[in-house]
Amino acid sequence: MFETRIHGRGGQGVVTGAELLSVAAFDEGKHAQAFPSFGSERMGAPVVSFCRIDDQEIRLREPILEPDALIIQDPTLLHSVDVFSGLKPEGYILINSTRSFEALGIADFVAGFPPHHVCDLGATELAMQHVGRPVPNAALLGGFAAITGLLAFESVEKAIRDKFPQAIAEANIAAARDAYAIAKAA
Image (cartoon, one colour):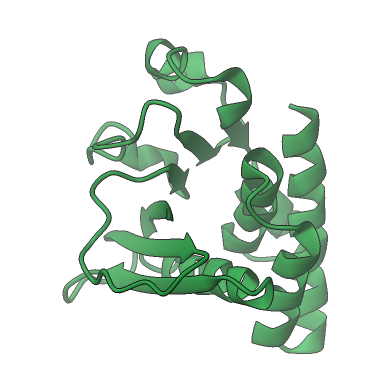
């Protein structure tokens, strides 16, 4: 089973990101489960969403404590929430930031992971460029597909297309495609 935890803030599409990830996996014939964890938070409050993907039925229902991958949609959470808690030693880290790991203050931590398992990606900038709004989730899913190899980009594209109206879907797909290319080249 491959378990992913997504950290972000209310309004950034954290819950939708986990849902799209699960739909992409389902479209590839896998079993998938996505669910959020939040209380009565308001816009901008920390939010966590989870996604499990497996080749067989998933019966677990609890939050993911030892993820295989982290998607961090808001880098301001790096030093206020323990986003790295439980991450497996060979895990994947995808951070929405144009700043280097050194500038983010996590260079020593990420140095312990395989080089192609960590990626900083300006997903918000890509979203602004293509979608016109600071919603980085679709771009991050493109980056996730690139660094993990868990899903084909075409599955991510289909999940986005199925979720949003045509013009919004195409803009998000363009952001995800650019993110995929950037993460592949990193």
